[in-house]
Image (tube, rainbow, N blue to C red; front, top):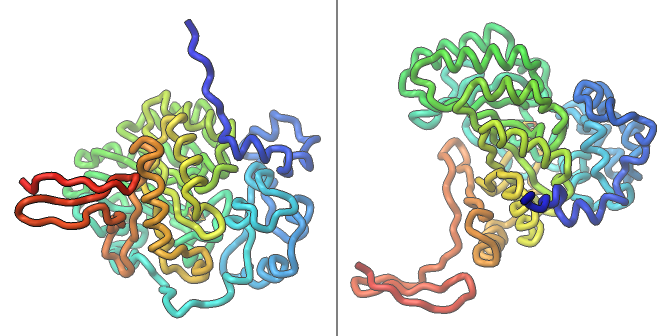
Length: 384
Ligand code: SF4
C-alpha cells in the first residue's frame, strides 16, 4: 500500500503563493527556471531590477544606493519570487533588500563579532575549538543576506580565497591531527563548480584524521536548483558528509526546497538547519514552529536558533534575549522535542556557542528539585 504524500509546502508558503512575484517570469520555461546557471546569470542586482518584482519604498531605494559599496545586493529570481510585491514587512524582503537601518551604527557593533580573525592561524582557517576548523573557500553567495554575520568579507572580491589560500588551508589541516571535523564555509561553498567542490572535498577526505565534513550552504533556501542529481551524487561520494543550511521563514519552505532536502537525505546526507532569530522575520513561536515541522517532514533537523551576532549593520534584526527565551518556552511542548532547536548566543570575541535555556527549575536543595513543566504546572523530583 502506498503511503499518502506529505505536503511539500508549509501552510504559509501555500497561502501566500498567489501573492508572490513568480508571474513576472511567466514566460521563462521551467527548463530554464530550474537551471541554477540561469538563476545565477539572471540575479537581481539593482533597484531597477527589484522594481519589476516589488514596490520599493523611498528608504529601500536610498539603502540600496548607500550600502552598495559595503555589501553587495543580489537575489536569485527564485528567491525574489518568494517576496510579497506590496508588503514591506514580508519576511523574505527583510532578509534580502537593504534597509536604511543598516546605515546606522550601533555602539555594540563589532568588526569581527565572533573573533574569527583572532583564531585564524592561516588565511581562510578559523581554529577555535580543539577538534574542528572552519574553512572559508569562497566569498560568493547566490543571495546576500542582509543579516549576514560575515558582511565584512562576504561579497568582497579582495577577500576571495585563491588557489594558494585553499592549498595553505589544506596544508594546515593536514598538519593538525587533532582536527577531525571540517566545516566548509564561506560565503557559500555551493557557488563553486561541481569539479572544484569535488576536488576540495576529495582532498579533505584524503586526510586520514578528518572524520567528518560539514558543508555550510544556504543554497537549499536561495537556489535549491543547484542540487542536481549529479551534484548530489558527487557530494555523496565524500561521506560522512553533513549539510548545514539556514531556513528562517515559512515562505522559504517551498516544493523546490523540499525536493532538494529529500534528495540529499535519500543519499544519506544529513541536513541540519541553523536558523537565525530575526526581528520582523521569525520572532514568533508560531512562525518558527511552522518552519521546523516542515523541516522535519523533509528529514532536516532543526539544530540551532542563533541570537543575531553583533556584526556591523544588523542591529535592527536583533531580538531581545528575553523574547528569544519566551519563544523557546512556547516551542517546547506543543510539538515534539525534535522540532525544538538549541537557542544559542555565539559569545562575542570568540567565546563559542552558549545555550540559552528558559528557567524551568525553581529551586534545588539536598532533598528535592522543584520545577515547572511546559504548561507551567509545578512538579517535584528527589534531588538524588
Ligand atoms: S548565504 Fe550565508 S554567507 Fe552568504 S550572505 Fe547569506 S548568511 Fe552570509
